[in-house]
Image 1: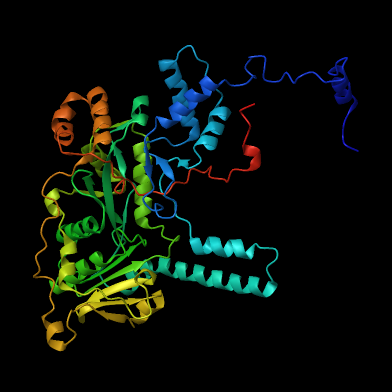
Image 2: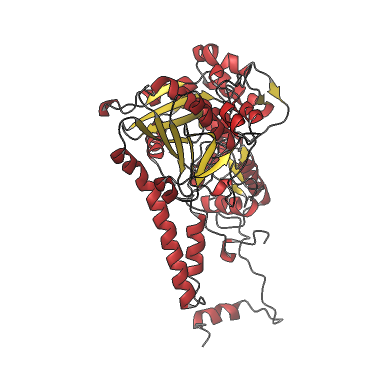
Length: 497
């Protein structure tokens, strides 16, 4: 009945002593490879894991403030284990490494909030919520059907957003430029495959992509961490540079698609920048359309995929110039290579100064974050139009929002952002945190060729140092390492025994 066989009974009887008390369990006491892993070896495993630099998440800091991500180029736990074996050989050559499974168990048990740092993958919160509710076996049939209908409407809305670029290219003439834009995951600099580099902080190189749907060409704007940050001001400056260099005078309308990242794409600063271009007479109309959250995969992301694929083939990239050259030489065989522009510090303007001349107002009964699009045009110079669905955009029945301080006809007629002063944002190189400076000095002194030290790194390592490290501008990526399944009871072992 209990599935106990004769052999198990025989072994139990053999362990009974003359006093009737069974002998002590001998498992884990022979000191062999299958025996107990001693505390010293375990401590070295934990020391190695703690040696990797970590950063907080850019997106989920509010919802999961304790979550940490590896600030390095490691792509798998297996790679971490290989580095542990190499580290043990170099520093404790007489020690025998623990098994990979033991190393992985220690990582899960003692560092549950530590994740690998990999390119961001975005899932749709609404889709996930619908799926969880629909799969509930106790849900009544009527409610399940209603949820399935709402989910179908949500997916249809997301699909409608994806179809808009091709529809605009078909319906509009050459005087309309249809674009999408996105900021790539920050590129580590220097990128070095040597083991020591995995334990050191690196400087970040930023790459902002504006992809032209008509020509199918990606325009890359590159700068490093000490030149500028990567917020709304930098995004506006890159768009301004793109307009000056690559938009012909006969283009009088821009349509731009992007995701909903508030810090870069969906904010009041970007809206005022667009309005200033209208007031300058550069365009008659600018519309920024936002894909549904979780459904934001664009042509710009495909461009980034190509770049990341090429960079994985290269073991050494010592400066942002080499990142730039690698991107510039890609896709030459297709006849449509990426157009690369290096952003200088004087290119970044403080567009936030435009806030002084307006009153920020939202549309009635519509939150700023819920808008599917914003539109500014020469027909309505006092503010902007917005809507909560793509249907409103097609019917052009915007909800108008007035930004003028005094609401009268004279004030609205005189309202003009084009003559307002927009100064340079940065006057000197931005400081780096002291721990990052120290790590960079080690990498540069030991691994970077001397001529590149003189050409680039001497200037970077000689700048001011921040006493406290601030990771707000560290790369914005959510982790998805493919192994983020929740830990179950069976995953935990009592190693204390």
